[in-house]
Image 1 (cartoon, rainbow, N blue to C red):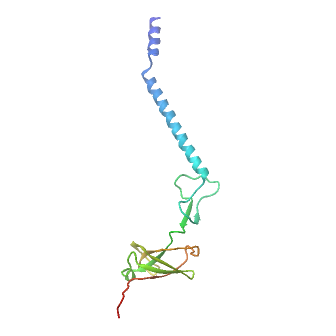
Image 2: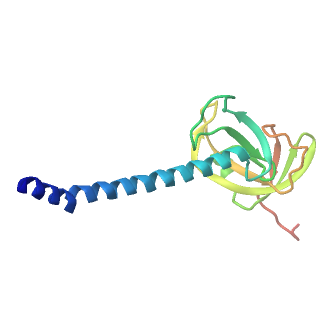
Image 3: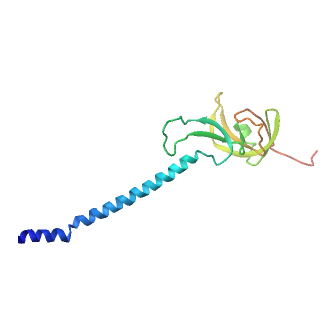
Length: 166
């Protein structure tokens, strides 16, 4: 009887691992509640649909209807209609004359636009003839709905200007 009573009192006082197990269960419950809240937020966002931060034209769709996707996976490619640029490939001889900020006249689809050199690539590549070329970006100042993205353009960059000379 004394042995059983002693055993009962020891279990009544508590098992030292019981407190640890209880703390682990509480932590797991809190973690599950946080995960559930995160999933609910994602579900609300998913029901709102996919929205771009800018106006543009969808040029590629990689999403497949009915297919499950993961967060961070590309679904669409959208090109801005406000930040339109023309990219030129120029040789080393022409590149020497170009600088960021130079004004340009652009003709696209028989319409005239103005712009300026906004970027000069720091990496040369080879064109179809095997010559080294550098990509130059010309930002179009006031694009409109008549610009067709991907269309070729004629560009005239103002490389130098002199006034009051003979």
